[in-house]
Structures are given as structure tokens and as C-alpha cells.
Image (tube, rainbow, N blue to C red; front, side, top):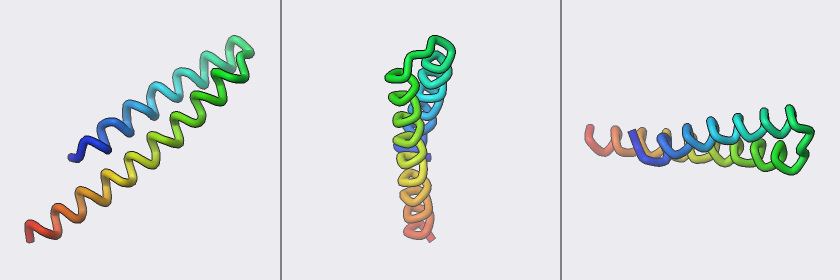
Length: 60
């Protein structure tokens, strides 16, 4: 598993928490920051999956 996948999962989790706190406290800036961090995590996760597939293909 690539580090991008791990970092992506962390960013998604932290982003979801920020978004939830932002919604609960009516803090639009925190909510938007959390949503953006979730998107960043999704992208990192997808890059990591591609890296893993390329690595697996090279090993074969």
C-alpha cells in the first residue's frame, strides 16, 4: 500500500471531522475547509491506487 493511500485516508477522515464540526457550529469556513480536505484525500487515494497497480504490474 502506497503512502498516498494512507495519507489520503487520513485527509478524508480529518476533512470529514472538520466538515461535521463546521456544520454543527455554523462555521462555513471550517465546513468548506473540511470538504476541500476530503476531496484532496480522495485524489491522494486514487493516485495511490494507480501507484499500487503499476507496482504490481512491474512485479509480474
